[in-house]
Image 1 (cartoon, rainbow, N blue to C red):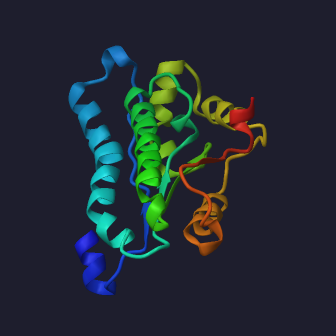
Image 2: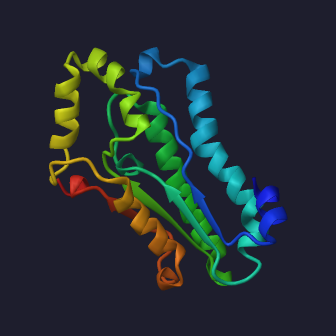
Amino acid sequence: MVDETLNRYGQLDILVLNAGTQLVAPIADYAEHDWDRLMNVMAKGPFLAIKYAWPSLTRRPGGRIIAIGSVLSLVGEPFKPAYVAAKHAVLGLIRVAALEGASVGLTANVVAPGWMRTPIVENQLADQMRLRGLTRDRVIAEMVASQPGKRFLETAEVAELVAFLASDRASGITGACLPVDLGALTT
């Protein structure tokens, strides 16, 4: 990925880490191979991307690393042990990158969205229904109810913050975890 970017554009200035996957299951039933797969995608993947992009991102001032975390970067949720652990790991990784890159003008931040109606949410509804003994409509209603704004976030709302963090206007923000959560973390 990094080599392809450098071959096409000659420089890599902004790295947005947005790969994700989900498996909803209690700890006792969570298969080790599922844990490894999820952690590889969501924790090891960002580490490797940063590692290999680092020389380009730090070559001149203004490099940006933006990881898409989750409100679960800061709190837990039942039946999501690997997802929560990976999101916490990425927040820690980003904070280390912020410290190591500060002297050369690199910033590294996490954007932490609340519930959005994305494929990762749609794909977990059946498991949520089964594990919680609720109907699909009830699971969706509880997701919405958990956000004080009483709605799903729009992906564009998250994208606006990512675009800002990628800009020169955000040059003083680094090592931060910025929620876009309709107030969910304030409850």
